[in-house]
Image 1 (cartoon, rainbow, N blue to C red):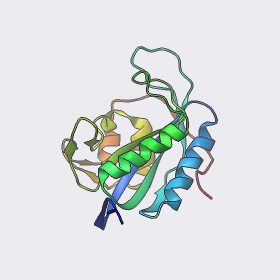
Image 2 (image 1 turned 135 degrees about the vertical axis):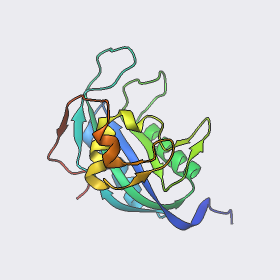
Image 3 (image 1 turned 120 degrees about the vertical axis):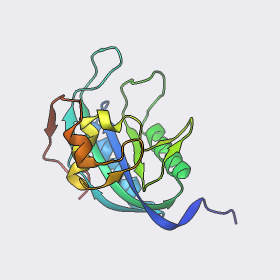
Image 4 (image 1 turned 90 degrees about the horizontal axis):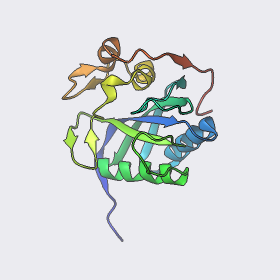
Length: 178
């Protein structure tokens, strides 16, 4: 039998979830359902859902995003978790044609315990999380005191307090899980 790509100890992980194409809420709910059923993942909590304007490179118009953060414990290694996220994005219809393009599903590993990784395919913590209120606000709803390691060396709440992104966020009265 092939060896599973798992660790012995469960790590605390935070995933950013976003969607701005198709049935955005349904895409996020479907991703959460898959995460909940995965044998190597314990879904601890899901943040409230927020709606915000899309951040783009060139200012072109895109549909608004729905965003949330998932708090997990997993025995998957970071690369295996990334592979699962990419599979879910592909299954939702995401095509990687251009950077910052609209997408039916976007899953980002924000933090994986206190690990710091800098590889071409995976950077942990997520390199732009401190610039994104649409990530920090839902994350602060879940775990404001979670300490994010280098290069941030700050809690989620501290990063939210000094976040330069002032784009409006609208908290929706919907849940991603029942």
